Structures are given as C-alpha cells and as structure tokens.
Amino acid sequence: MRVVVVSNDLVPEMGTPVAAPGLRASGLAAGLRAHGHDVTVVVDAAVVERYGGAVGDAAGVEVIAMDGLMPFLEDRIPVAAVLINANQADHVFESPGVRFVYDLFAPRLLEVGQRSDGDQAATLDRIRTRKLKALGMASAVVLNGRRKAGYAAAWLERAGRDPKAVPTVLVPMPVELFESSPDAEPRLVLGGYLQHWSRPGEWLDLVAGAAGDIPIEMVTGKHWGTSREPDPGSHLSALIESGRVVRREPMPFDEFRRVLAGAWAFVDLFDDTLERRLAMVTRSVVALATGVPVIHPPFTEIGSLVHGAGAGWVADPSQPAAVSEAVAAATTDRGEVEGHGAAALALTRQVFEPKAATAPLAALLREWS
Amino acid sequence: MTLIYRGRLDAAPAAQGEVLGEWDVLPADLLPRLATADALVVLDPVSFPFESLRPADWDVPVLVSLLGLGADDIAALGDDALRRLLPGDAVVAEAAAWDLASADRAWPDAMWLGPATASGVVERFLAGADRDAKASIRARAVVLRRQLQQLHPWTAFDAGGSASRFRPALPSYIDWVGTPPAAVVVAGDLAPDADPAALWEAVAPGGALVVLAEVVTVPGGPERAAATEVRDRVLAAGPAGALLADVESVPERPGPHRTAAVFTFLRGDA
Image 1 (tube, each protein chain N blue to C red):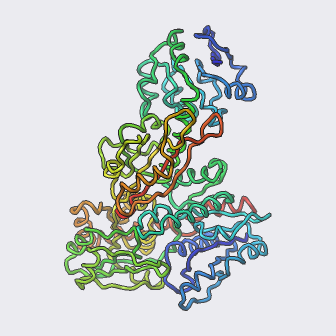
Image 2 (cartoon, chains in turn yellow, blue):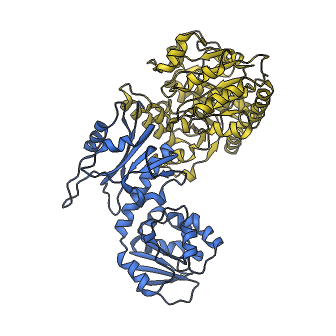
Image 3 (tube, rainbow over the protein chains, first blue to last red):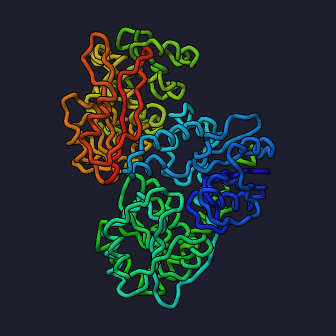
C-alpha cells in the first residue's frame, strides 16, 4: 500500500544535520516499509532552500514545493498521507480519496511558551490555526507518548471532533538499532540542540564536577532553522569557556551516532516544565537505540521507560546528590554500564525499533486499503 | 417536571414527579424528556441507561440512590454515571457506600444526602435543584478540563478554592497541592479586585496560570471586565516573558450566550 509521509524538516537520508521531526518522518517510513507499505517521504522544498547547504538525493525521498503537495497526493493516491506536526496544514485540503493522518508530535504551544522573544502571540495563533485545521481533517491521529492522550482529546474537541470517533494510535519514536558496547575507558556525551526549553542549569556544574577528568563531548548547537540564538545560560557558557568539554557542532545523523557509540552514558537532563513533561525526548531515544545508557530526569515518559527497563539512571536535576551519584555510577563500573546498555538495546527492540513502533499505524493503514 | 426513575423497584415515588419504570427509559423516550426536566431522581441506577445520555443531558440536576448496592455495582456505575456527577447533583447512600463512591472524585460533602430516600430528603434536593446553575458549572468545567488537558499538569494549586466546584470533572491525574508553587495555578473565579500578581507568584518555573473569568456584562447584571481587560490585567502583573497561550469561551445553555472564558497563560521566561 502506498503511503506518503510529509516531513516538515530535513531527513537523515539527506546526509545533513537533522532534528526530531525529520527523524520521526524517516523512522515512520522505515517502520511502515518493514510492514510492506510503499512509502515516500516528502520534504518541503522551502525547508531545503532555507537550509542552503548541500542536500543528498535519497531513495524514497522527494523534495517538492508545498503548493504542489495536493496535486502530488491526488496523483499518487496513497492510502494515507501522514503529516508530521501541522506545519503543512496550510497546504492541504479535503479531496476525495485522500486520507490524512496527523502525527501530533510536539507540544508546540508549550514549546513556544518557553520563549520570550516578542512574537509569540502571532506564532501561537499560526500554530493553533494549523493544528485545528489538521485535526479537523484527520482520519486518524498518531501520538508518540501515552501522556499525550488527554492533550490530543482536548484538541480534537477544540476542532469539533468527537475524540472517541477518531482512531488514535500510539507510535513511539522509531529509531533503527545501531548496536555498540562501552569503550574501554569512560566517556560521556552531553546535549543535543540547544532549544528555548533546554534550560541548562546548575546540574551542568554537577555533571562536570562528578565526572572528574573523564572526557565529556558536548553536541550542543543551534538548529539551523532557528532564527534566534537561544540563550545558553550562565552554566553552559561557563562550561564551554572552561575548556572542560569537547564541543562539537551539529553533524549528520550517522556521524552523531558514531560519536554516541561506545560512550558510557548520554547525559540528557533539563528542568521540570510542562513542556518537558509532555515531550518524548528524541535525543535520549537515539542514545538508547545506540546501546548507550542515559542519565535522564524521572518526570518524563522516557524517564519511566528508562527506569523500568534499567536502561540508565534517572536523576532529578534539582537534586544535586542524585545527579552526582548517577554520573559517578556511569563513569566507574564498566560492567554496570554494559548491563544498562544491553537493557537499552532490549528496550529499543521492544518499543522504538521502527517495525515494532509502527505496528499499530501499519495495521490501521491496512484496514483502510 | 421531575423525572423519578424507580426502575425495577416497587417503591412508591418519594416526591412529586413523573415516575418511570424500566420500560419507560428507552433513549427515544427518555432523552426528549430529559431535555426539559428540572431534575432526575434515579432510585435504581443499575438498570438506568446512563450510557445513553449525551453530554448536554447532564445539565439536569441528578440524584442517584446507591442504597442496597455493593462495591461491584458502585464500581460498575463509575464510568457512565458517577464520573459525571458534579456539585448540583446529589447522592443518597449508606456512609460506607458514600466513602467508596466519593473516593478520588473530589465531591463536596454537601452532595451526600444521607442514607435514606425519605420524601423529605428528596424534596429538599428538588427544592434546591437548579438546572441553569448545574448547566453553568458543567459548561465551565468542560472548558477548564480541556485547557488543563492541553497542559497535562502533574500538580495544580486551586487559588482560593475557587476551582473546587469543577474538580470532579477535571483530570484525575492532577495532584492538587495545598500550598504553592505548582506547575499550574487555577483561579476558578477571577474577582474584579483580585491581584493577579499573587497568582503568578504561585506558578512554578515553566508553569502556567489558568484563569476562569466572567467577561460579558449581561443586561441587568453586574458590570464585568471585557476579555481583553482580563488578559491585559493578568499579563501586566506577570513576569516579563508571560504570554497568553490560549483562551476559550464557555458556551452557555440555554441559549447562545457566552459570558465566561478560560484563559491559559504561560510563565514564559521562567
């Protein structure tokens, strides 16, 4: 069955740095293909243009201008078009034979609420309008975490839909396995894109202190599509200036995974906010799928999974002792690290591996064909 | 008109009203009657078709008798019936059954009418039953629930206890804390002279302030601030990065009026 996944960001197959939405599109495509679907990933030509750098051709990926999206869909007649977030909602409309699945991926309103750069009201209006349009048209809704069930139901009601009448399936972030085992010597990797909600706080000092002279690689840069430089905050700035960490700029996804591979832990901590509680933190999923245990807060859904599977250490960033203990554990006992890494891979096979993650969506699409 | 459902019971009706047996409540018969009823008394809830009621049918004040029911029956009634009850409704039950049914439902004690359906008890309920008041609470609770679901807060603080009348309808995963700070602060009734700065102080970093306010002056009613004034007043009292994330008006019944709105503010640069 033919399926189109509409990405609002670059996808890893293009060989560029990517972010969560592009990984999401690519992962959904991989999973649905494993279930026998014929999947094309569509990337907005305007996104490629804005990126401005070299973008590789990739099988199964088409770059098209979004004013051509509906003709493209009407020509291909897929069983469904899956929209990652609602960015492209302005470009789609009801058309006989075209079904839309809305992947309610990121809690965008809450993300914007973490900013204070003056244009949030207009941004919120645009996001709300697109979200309501996408939900109004959706034949089904995809969620990446259980906690978003109420969130999705509330928005469906806002869009005039009966939440019980719209099929809603849970599809965790699909990420391919990239098996690795811990290096001989301890090494930590820290970060991901610096976003307005990252809030690198005091815990950074604790991580650096507890790690002693163990190498820390920091992959903390600005996403190319972000117009304003997020404030790194005093703790991150001080850490960077101290020369204590090896700082790396954003890199293609394959390269990121090679940096991750063999690390004793991936440190993914942040302050407790409404936005972070609803987020399904992609960077941690990628680390787990690389066999790298994560140090993660207990208050996210990923934190619960990590705790349940023994795939790392949960530590509340507001509890200094917990952060220090987690870092100490992640940098001293290779056997423990190895055990957590194996648990991370087992958790990935069960939850995040693309075929497993997309099974409910693949089944729904099969019902429609 | 009061509808009294005696169902399979032989009991004589405990008050004035139209008495319905178990064959009188097929949805096609029941729903049109409910739309205009002043109150509904359900003496045999196990056989009453609660599942057929549409959301707006719950505007009618409901008295449910749990007399003679065991824990399993009460649990079975939870999803379709008990979960829907709000202040303005009432329960007749033995003390143990009341404790069981009211656990985790945030029902005020005033909803419990005691362990008997003696006519005086039912009549007192009927005398106080106010369909418009119940509809008003329900309409506000629905919008407040939606706004809170969008935030998925793990803790909330009920400023001044003003949200308590909506609590049975709000998400059950919320831990209502007795003292701030909380991820979300709810002001269930923003008084014209209230100082929003105190509300903002109760909001945890990265959190939200959810405010219900009456924003339309009804002819003959008290003067009320317009929605834009409420917005400006709350934002002016907030931290530098505070912003209005969402606002949703409350549809009133009966009629097309919208006199209240729920505002969701985010702390922004916490």
